[in-house]
Length: 226
Length: 178
Image (cartoon, rainbow over all chains, first blue to last red; front, top):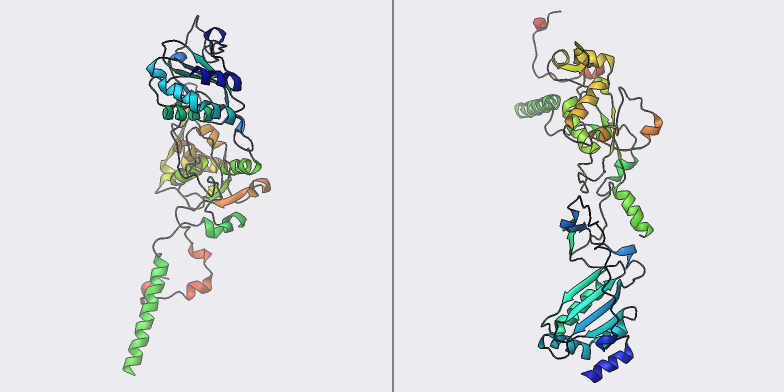
């Protein structure tokens, strides 16, 4: 185990000795200082921050910048609750670090404590997650989650729960969607487009129809009699 | 955001100019229809917090039609704020003074309880006849359908057509008193 950890130290910027661990997570994140504590007259801090899911600076359009800055993996070398974490460190951490050169990875062993992941993001968010009794596969999943999210969204109330599994191909609606092009290029005021819809024939039309029927009946009668 | 997406955004939130011919139309029923366009209620993107109302140009407001004898019966109330400042004006009198006022008030009243109605009303342009300024007319790209067909008066029909109109029943010569 120690051997593997030391090899990790050589390859990535990792500190195995407790006394030399350089841990940045102690600083207050921006959210802790968002509202004044003394003389607080609002209860805003009691409520979840409301937000939309968004990509910072149009991330992913044209270029992608990984929003994860650094991740700290804390674990115990002896305790059973860290077993999955140790498996992960032995097998998968090097791949993770190689595939993500922009992410600083810290590994911090500490005696008889629950394994923990702490991730820090470009927007100042700090995401803390307990990995007690997690298996190696679960940790792989969580590391992927941490790597791909743009910030800590756990303390956020989503303003809208809109979702689609099938995004529109033809694009969002515009006033000209499903519109007859004749209406756009017509001369206005236009009598044809503006007149009311008639569902029933008018009395005049009905009278003309009756007259036509009468004439036809007369013609037939004349034919049969002659 | 790419140029295509940006123009898509402009397209979705573009304000359309609609035309409505108020000739022989009930102003109070027409107001309900005009309201749909002024507030953008017909759009699938509609949301109360979404500023998506359109412009509506109403022409021929002089030729609106009130039901029954409402021209004589319907009173428009106004109060100056001073004692004895209340006044009730009959609809025909209001219409004589300002042929756009009844239409305007009808649309305003139809949006009662809506905080945005003063801003929606700014997008309503009423003209007493068909003389609309060119800069307004060139914006129009849609015409709202009228509610009722416009009746045709007998003196508007050419006399030849009247003479040729089919007669189902043959009335006696002295049926119509000359």
